[in-house]
Amino acid sequence: MKGRWAAGIPPRYFVWIIRDRLAISERPGGYARNHRRVRRQEEIIWLQGNGFNRVVSLLASPHNLHAYDEVDLAWGHVPFPPGADPRLVLPDLYQQLDAWLADGERLLVHQEELGDRVMGVMGGYLLWSGKLPSSAQAITAIERIVKRQMGPEGRQLVTVVPSLVRPAGRA
Image (cartoon, rainbow, N blue to C red; front, side):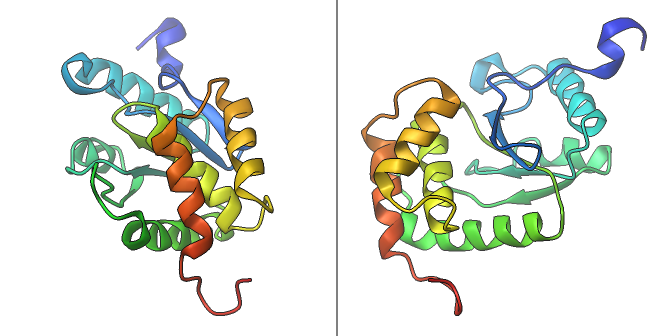
């Protein structure tokens, strides 16, 4: 591989949620019919070259996970399909994110596309982890970071977070 492609390309709609620690994007390689194997490989090369230790997939299916295995890039799979109860999925996801971040890992979280669902999950994480004190602040922060307004689905996910059961020792 030569030239600028040797370093890969960033995943589409890549954005840092916590600078140099936690990022989100569209699924590496694109989503649905737009998914391209070559693009996925280029994006994985970029992730590795930029120090990412783990990709966290929220897809309902195990798509792409084999591609991470092929290059020894660790992954986490926390399925969060449409219709799933966030009260059952988010506590596990947030605890895993906390553990990986505490271990010094650099993470990329994705679903098919970067939309309200991923935005809501990340806004919820900022609230759940205590990085922001209120749902309104979490929503506003994510909207500013992603540079788009969060829709009703994402806002609903953030507002569920205060009702989640937290591990012992977490306020």
